Image (cartoon, rainbow, N blue to C red; front, side, top):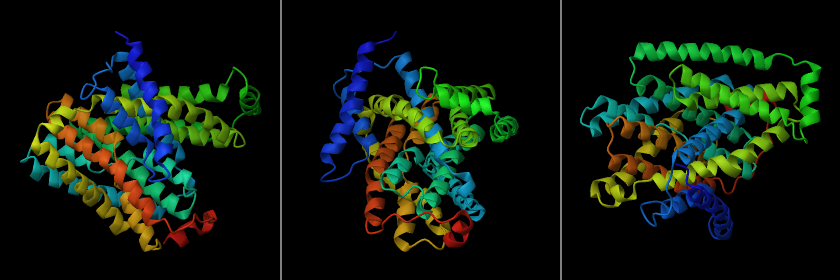
Length: 404
């Protein structure tokens, strides 16, 4: 049953959140998502009990998470990423995964599937949360921004692949075959997206950009829906499809209509950050099991433990394998930014609770630590880089030599 009142409450919170964020910015700049989640907790069953999520709201929340991952995938400029940086980013994530699962095995007493859930949670990066911060500071297209985007993209994409391989409930061989099949179809879609478009295609984008037709926006939404459906058809997590859709959209728009791509994606961002993404964060707060956290001393103790593990497991290998050319302050900021997590922690812990291998108290502790990471780590990272002004992006030919 649909409860319109709950949707009204959620959108009220979505409007209040930026007002509160701006009103406190003169003293301390707190990420917007913290207000969205905190207000969601307040209207949820843990405090006031006003919100009653239903299937419609839950579906919109899932779409919000998919949109967040889609926009993160779109922001990655793969053509600007040096191959060596990408290899080191992948190596850092694989090291994080091994360390995370190893520590989780020790914490869980050898329960393998539970260790996969906890270990994978420790390796994610909230790229969709960090990129807007870098964009607002003018750092997104600088050498530091590109390094952060590379390490963050692997931290976003890697756990999604791990979910498909380790947490699907299928045999590893079967999961790998399905993943390869999905990759093959996606590669075909990438080939199509990179092909030159006919003149009518760009003309249609131009003529409908400011009309009710909105051809380009509708095409982007079709790509997103199609990739989500493709991932589901292969039995994979839809977040894998969302990330792939973001990459495809960038290739398609920049190839077909580079002069209008920024305006088109701006319209998509308006839908995402204006409606779907805040809805996901507010519902995350509503669904947060505050009772399990506050009435179990073990869960409370686990919150700072998991926060430290995010830094050690995810941030440690990144700090070790970061580009040598990064200044010391940038290396510390990179470590803090990549250790910021939340969306995938929510998704992974939900899988663990649904499959009854993770208790609600442990899930609440992981999500609580992820919330703290979003609150504290970007603030510390920005303070670390406070004295560094955004640099001009180097030319593509000099990017790798300067980064290394």
